[in-house]
Amino acid sequence: MTKRVYLETYGCQMNVADSELILGQLEREGYTVTGDPSQASVMLVNTCAVRDNAEQRVIGRMGELKRFRRPGVVLGVVGCMAQRLGETLLQDAPHVDLVVGPDGYRGLPDLVASAADGARVADVAFKAWEHYEDIPARRTLGQPSAFVTVQRGCDYRCTFCIVPMTRGRERSRKLEDVVREVGALAGQGVSEVTLLGQTVNSYHDGERDFADLLRAVGDVDGIRRVRFTSPYPNDFSDRAITAMAEVATVCEHVHLPVQSGSSRLLKRMGRRYDRERYLDCVARLRAAIPTIAVTTDIIVGFPGETEADFLETVSLVHAVGFDDAFTFRYSPRDGTGALRLSESVPEPVAAERLERLIAEVREVARQRNFRLVGSTHEVLVERIARRGGRLQCRTRTNKVVLLDGPESWIGTYREVRLVGTSGATFTGVSVSPIRELAVIT
Ligand code: SF4
Image 1 (cartoon, rainbow, N blue to C red):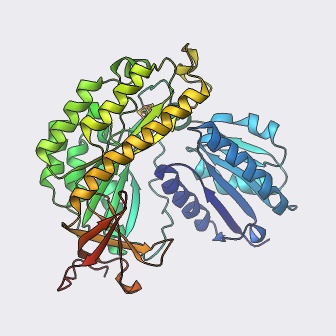
Image 2 (cartoon, helix red, strand yellow):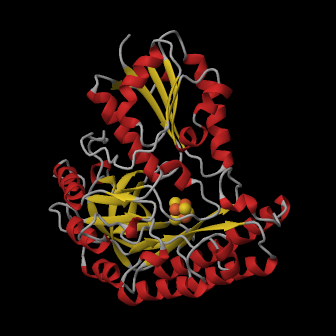
Image 3 (cartoon, rainbow, N blue to C red):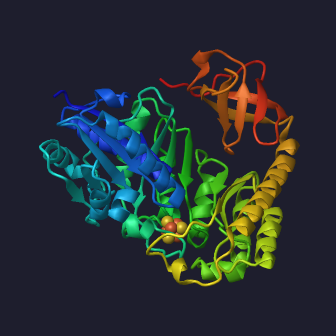
């Protein structure tokens, strides 16, 4: 049978980067990539375990993909849900042939071969040394942006979070290896990189820390923009903030998960800061980088959240003036500390709080964005927007701008003036005369 792999990716940017690794590993073994599951000899779903509804979606999707299963065709679950459920998944889902966690991708070709021969296989062992250094990630050629994993795993134990159970202990890649990869990407025309880690600013390769990493990556020839996600508030050293301010390629945006505005709740969540410390971190970032945009993650309905706690979260949204926030309803996860906490918040209460929070976040962002109309920004033209056929661009502060222009502008940097906003996204016009900034070579 012709070796063809079909892969679907759910979840975070780390999973997107891991999917590029998986495809790179399989390509090395003679597989080609197909977008059509009916043509595939192996179908993989790279999964997320952070919320129950993400897992339910995957279970539904596996049910749909099973109709493409024929003798010799393998259907596999990889990623965090695979790690979490392990062999149980093989027992509970007879149509699943293969279960592989985030540390097992090196062995995928052999595991797929065994599964194609009829075995049902799982590899969910943690491998604290695994960085996949020698496996070339399969990138989509011609894209101006790329994700670069610099750290795997997490040593924090936030009580709501399954990640330490699915991705193991924190470890950082060697700085030289990261720089080499970024240099190779720049050689292929990538000009924007996003450095990925669960607590990316705790990066430490034994000798060099996150500040060193920003300076080294920011200095790579051809790289015009450096982003990173997601930092942990306590891990922002003054050195790192100074590097962010001094390295011209580091963008003026930080996605800084807060999770709650109530110190009492933060303690129950096992977050290692309180409201004041978080606000202090934002203040330090803004003092060093006055134009920095700040976005965040917030959970509502965490066990024990009272209306007063929730109102503290709302007040924090206003106090910080977030540019945007991903807002979630708490999702209980087996094996996490929060399951032992009492006082669960009734679903309707959590749902109503989520709605209120979304409205507050939108209003704060809307007010901030309206103030930006009339200002001029460098944007990277990313692609054709899904709706309306205009060009979708991004400012250094991570604001989305829609622009009229030819497709040939994709991958180029331009200066635009923001002429309007929906409150969330902007419309812009090219500043005249159009100044061609760095262009993919
Ligand atoms: S820092 Fe907390 S929320 Fe983030 S991955 Fe680690 S345990 Fe999960």
